[in-house]
Image 1: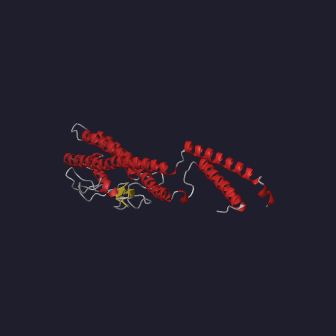
Image 2 (image 1 turned 180 degrees about the vertical axis):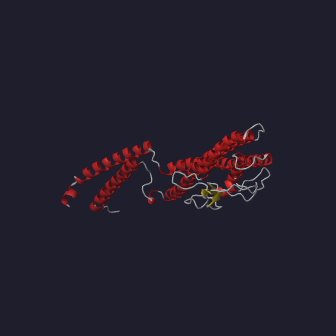
Image 3 (image 1 turned 45 degrees about the horizontal axis):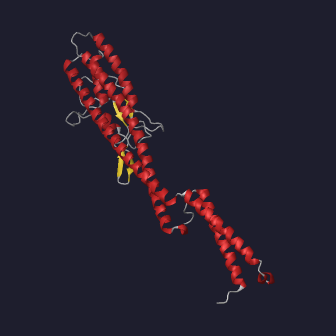
Length: 318
């Protein structure tokens, strides 16, 4: 086989160019910390890395949603806790007011404290979150849900028709997608919490939490003749409200516990995604430095060899 001078020249220059490209590629790998600089470096690994990265992004979004849901539910639980505390105080005052030894003036003092609690409960029912949205308004979160109606003349009897507060929200429960297959309610509407109080058997009593409290106040503030029977019924209704709020809080707590489990699982999955991406993309610096040194030696050898061959007389003739 005849080997021409030009073939020797081209082979030498091609070899040096290849080693220069190898050095350039390793330099880029070392500077970026990635072993895959383009899909052509490893098409299979590049394709898998893309899929894993997309899955990681979806998982991260669900983790963000879970954190948001947990924050909303924590705020909701805190507010419901304040409602529960108020109801427990109402229970104590109702029992005190039922004592036959109390005078009308003494019951009036208890009624005055109950009015203060009533105002506090109305404020809690109209609680807004950090963005100004009402947490008990359902989907109508920009609308103030509860409004107190001024009663010019207290009702003469304890009945289902006593409506002292109106509700302007709806029956919706805003949700967030916390996994690909699960949407979770992140609030409770005021209709379920305050207006449709259920007894221990789960039956709606027909009197809202506010009606219960107002009837109790009316029975003790001197506007009506005190009735032990009315007081007993009011205390039973307050007891139902305590149980009702406890049930709502238990539901919220169950969702919080569920979120804790989902978040722990999501973080574990995220760790696996990170580990796999690292395996696919991250550079082994020790191996890369070794390759860089080898390519450098090869390039230097190729340059030296080319320089020596180029000194031959036949090259000088070209």
